[in-house]
Length: 195
Image (cartoon, rainbow, N blue to C red; front, side):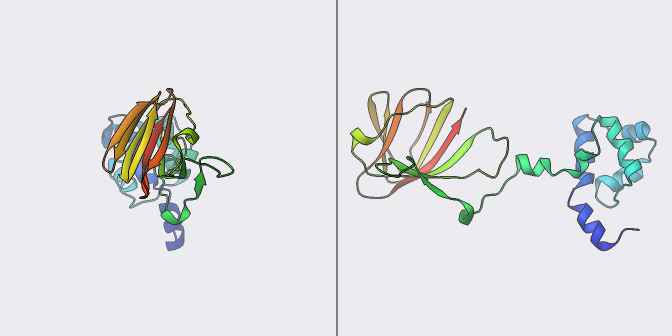
């Protein structure tokens, strides 16, 4: 019998949830998994519900059915890669340009804690600079902007579009574009890029 401390520590790995996920991804019923592992459906059910921590030999039987190693059950990869919380106080603000001089915007990464991201999300605060100082740039993929506050001037190719609070824009980021705040009021929003 495991001590309360060991049960708590092992419970953090969510072994049962991982077993259930593997089984459901194969559209397999408990009785089918039981037949493949020579374990009872009742035992497997207890494992999946987190009511029982399996022994290593039991876990190895399950792992062999799904062609995964034991490390699959003890790594935290699922949370690390697909679930990441970034607290407001943990974010860092960076200017568009390294020296900060004549930067068109300051930004904070909203998703830096997530590994293997499929998109990048930023909080941006645009600055009031002369249109001639807003340097056009390009990058791979597409970009989406949601203006939360203020007025944003977005130059796309050679034409400026004014976006106000509540407006959104989606565009091909391989085309030259730049931004600037219009007016004296703060201008900020959400920027999402996908390569």
